[in-house]
Structures are given as structure tokens and as C-alpha cells.
Length: 100
Image (cartoon, rainbow, N blue to C red; front, side):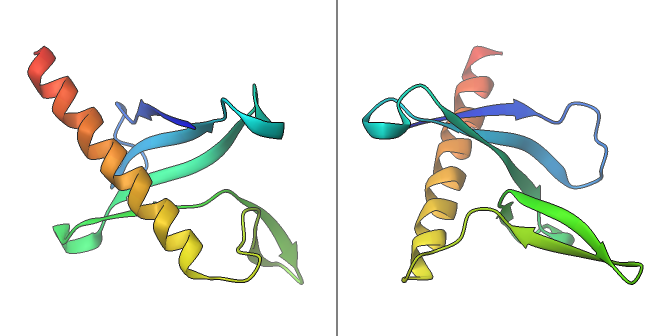
């Protein structure tokens, strides 16, 4: 699996650093990608967070969100993926800094 990033150069919405995609290169998902991940600066500048793909819908005028990528059993599996994306983004930023 490869993680690709598209930086948020426009600065809108505030705090959003980049979008991320998971590109699969083996197994039954070979040749497919999963989009919709967002990398955000936490409010107050105390770290970063990753949001997962979700679909918004409305119930009685109230906006809700339905997570598209959910754990089967172990909720920690999302945390492992979140950390992998954040680590890959840090490496991506370091590559950009050395290229300048």
C-alpha cells in the first residue's frame, strides 16, 4: 500500500494540511485507491489528526456523518492506520523541505 498526498495550498478550510489517498498494490484491492482522508492541524497547534472517509446525510435538518471505513472488531486498527498516515505525511514534508 502506498499513501499519496495532495497538499492544501489554498488554506481553506483553515487547519487542513492535505488530503490523503491509499493506493493498493497487492491482493484483491490491487489497482484501486481509497480516497477521503484528511490531515488536519489540531486546534491550538498541539499535533495533527487524520479524518477518515465519511458520507454526510441529513435527518430532520440535522447533518450527520456515516464513516465509510470502520473496524471489523478491533477499534485500535483505525489508530494504527491513523499513525501510519501521519508518519508518512511527516516523511512527505521532510522530502519537500529537502527539495527546496
